[in-house]
Image (cartoon, rainbow, N blue to C red; front, side):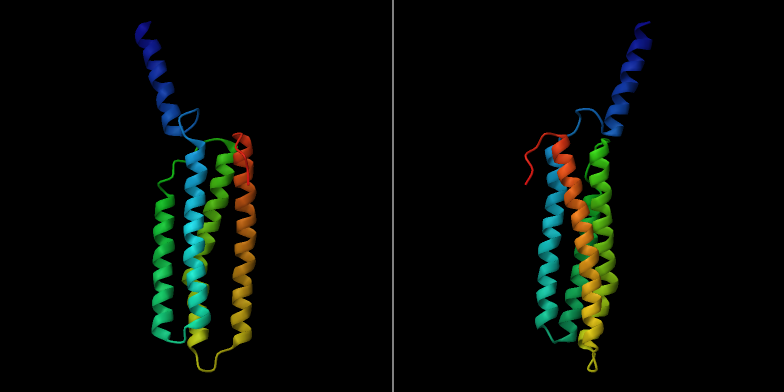
Length: 163
């Protein structure tokens, strides 16, 4: 009888640890990890935005785009280390965060590379350049709105004071 009780208790603990549920995680750390990666990325992306507005040297623009692509790749890898709680709000926040990162990575590797090519082309089509920037801005704004909404829902579910 004692062995069966201990086995049940051991299995219950393993389920809690593996699943990340219960009070086994710090909700403040979880949401702050997501916010920190998002803030870091925002600063990096803004720096590239300034670069593409002012820089005319194709090599510098390409290097800046490659550096930014490497940076988002690093942040995506870093995000994979975040322990995701099993609550509904935590999962929704995680999904919004992953969508944001995935779309940012696609923009940097595809759209930003295209922007650099347009910017360095002597016969550049600035109308097309603006349309690519506009498309990126729409996706980013929608992703950030979803992410902020999920952060707020998570914070409210855990009784945090929200922004």
